[in-house]
Image 1 (tube, rainbow, N blue to C red):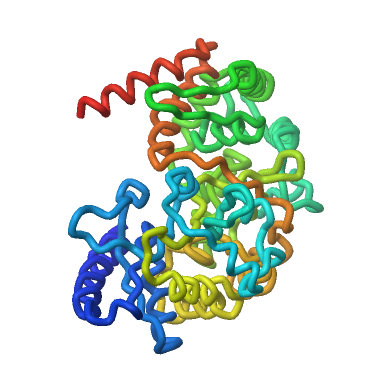
Image 2: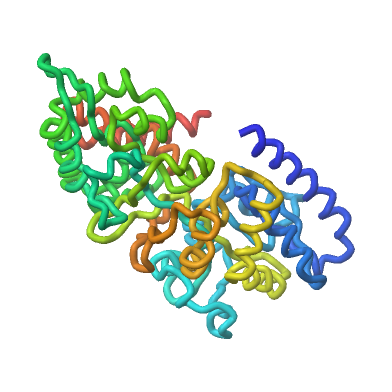
Length: 421
């Protein structure tokens, strides 16, 4: 965390000096706004690769909320970061369809569903950069329980594995419990996504399919009561044993699985990765991409669109991305990140042919081209809404059936409180 804070400070200071020094050469100077600190390294590599265009990187922790640029602030040319899908509704971006029409980029190089999520109608406004998947981590010594002919795990498989692994004393106290959805709020939400529910936010109201939500709650309650006896048993077990990082939880042989994201898993050291195995979460042969998918676009008010296209074309290239990965690893810029912009690349060839060279645990485990399912385009504040309203509702529902309208009331109250602040 400290390393990232320092890098952000350097990024902001460097951008200010660079912009000031290049003010007389605006036709060659691009400004890139991002909430992903790794773009500082990528921009430096791009600047060194040619002498036609220069880019200055400006860090914005709340990217969408920073747009449009404030009075007196230089507008960006490029924008790269998470939760950008919402920006298309505000018409913040220029069309990138020219890049495909002129064969500067090929649609076949990308995961189709992720690329389509950057479209509005027939126009491509955003290009996916990287993504992450939900991951179930397990001890490498538990292979006798887990099917070795697959790289994925479904809800039903998790239940079946749990029945083999769970153990209780004569007093019905669990000494081993394979997995419980409520142990990780992100997994609880993954249940909703996998079942097809979505949320529409309009002003101080939130709309959702009530029958589907109630069906998801019933699914979670049945899982808990059928597989792990009760909500209290799951919580007691977590209190006793699950106080360590996710990889250590499974190594102590008390639980079979721990849920995390691919970026958290693959930021572990090689020694740590050697001790664990993992499966991608899957339902109906699809895996929901986590919502912080990184995307990139050209700001509509940019006066340097042609040069901005040059950066995107350079960036979305297999050889360029391999250089990005090699540079970070060789210079040890940050040992706590993974792949491209801390995730799998949106370029299929990079994942299939480059990442396994640097992450040996990915051999034979790269997701297929049709596997990732793009997330919904929610606004930037959605991550707070999910954390403070949606996930607590799901967790409470496992303990005691909740009124599905609680979410509507809680969201309205949350909006009003934030208006007052």
